[in-house]
Amino acid sequence: MKKEMFRKMSKSAAAYLVGGIAFIQLAPVFFDTFPPETLFGLSADRLMQYLFALVAIGFPIVLLIAYLSSKNAEDDRKTEKKKVTASGDYKQKIAVIPFTNLNKDDDGAFLVDGIVEDLITEFSMISEIEIVSRQTCFNLREENLSHQQYRDLHELDYIVSGSIRAVENRLRISVELSETPDGNVIWSNKYDRVKEDIFDIQDEIVRKITIALLGGIEISSLKRAHRKPTESITSYEFLLKGKDNHHKFTKEANTEAMINLDLAISTDSNNAQAYAWKACVIGQALGRGYCEMTDEKVSELLQLLDKALEVDPNDFECHRMQAEVYLSMHDFEKSKISGQKATSMNPNDPRVISVYGEALLRVNELDKGLEYLEKAYELDPIPQGQTTSDRRLAALFYGYYLKDDFDKCQLLNQQMVNSDARTWLLNSYMCQMKDTDYSNDEWFKRGLNEFNSLDWNMEVDRFHLNNDLLKSQLIEFAEENI
Image 1 (cartoon, rainbow, N blue to C red):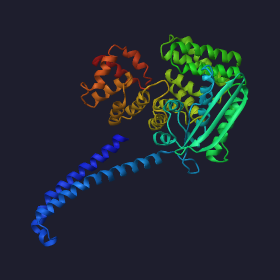
Image 2 (tube, rainbow, N blue to C red; image 1 turned 60 degrees about the horizontal axis):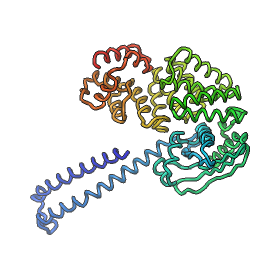
Image 3 (tube, rainbow, N blue to C red; image 1 turned 90 degrees about the horizontal axis):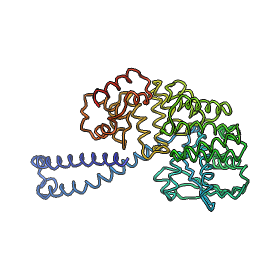
Image 4 (spheres, helix red, strand yellow; image 1 turned 90 degrees about the vertical axis):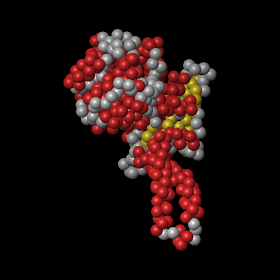
């Protein structure tokens, strides 16, 4: 946004200078016809001095006006971007800052973060408010911002924060809702309950905060009874440990996550999320090369998802993961169906709407797919486990490539830190088709060095294209030019 503001100010400054110089150059011609001594009682030389001073004084004024105009336009754009509810009110944007862990050691950290993650998920299922993504919420923990900075940097209206202490079988939770930019506390409460009451506590927190923000309206998504993952607090704790290890993205943590989730399942065979997350852990292992891709592993993954949905057909996480699996298996229609179900249940989770957008691209619903991918990028520009926005940008690049939008593709490519193999090959092929010289571009030379030893038959298959002609053209292009 700063670049855009600078560009507009530069254009205004350039236009003013061109106009000022032209004005000064034309002034003597005007003076020949209308002598300044007669009109103003001043000599031509003295009046030219005044005109030079006037143009010089006007330059910073024009810059200031251009800056204020650009800033107001940006504020209007931000306001327009905000979604509105059915009643026409703007959605309130909130973040749940990870609660402080008051335990003496870090053993309970997984429980504290897991409870907060569940709260974020609960809020994301309420269409009347906007909740920032889990990744952004957890990043905010390290930033230690003031309420004014939360408002300025992240456009937040409200902050949810608190602390948790786990003492044997009891939980002591303190939580408060505060507004930005002043930091006034709108609602707060303290809970001293047994661990088995955690779902009731989460329910009350979400309900009370939602009522504080929206008033006493009926929110159907608050009916937690249909989403309670397990009756066993032990199974729930193993589930949270498994998710915590899954989010560490290492081979060792992946193995530990598998153990945690097996224990969650053995403790409660009706814990649907444990089956779904075990499937996700297997998918992570396959995707990151922690285990060999075999028919048996893929079959196990699918069976876990089927079991999860058999236990709880209304769990959006299960449908999201199923959409991911079908996408990787090139069953794009089934991926779309699963993604649609997940999105209808949780339209504010960037992981959900991202995979749905990807599936839509594969069935040639390009505009709708890009709409969801743009929203995922807006909600969560740096996905969990990533350090850049490259993954989100690569998904958008593929969509705009399918729309043959060359200029948009080049803009997205410039925004990437490092192009992935798909983006790099598609862009190289696109540039050649458009007769654009790219051989000396840095992105091309960097990719040529990085990707020149790939097996392109295997690599292009991993692009999950739904176009056999394009697939063969890309392989032929790669073999001839790389």
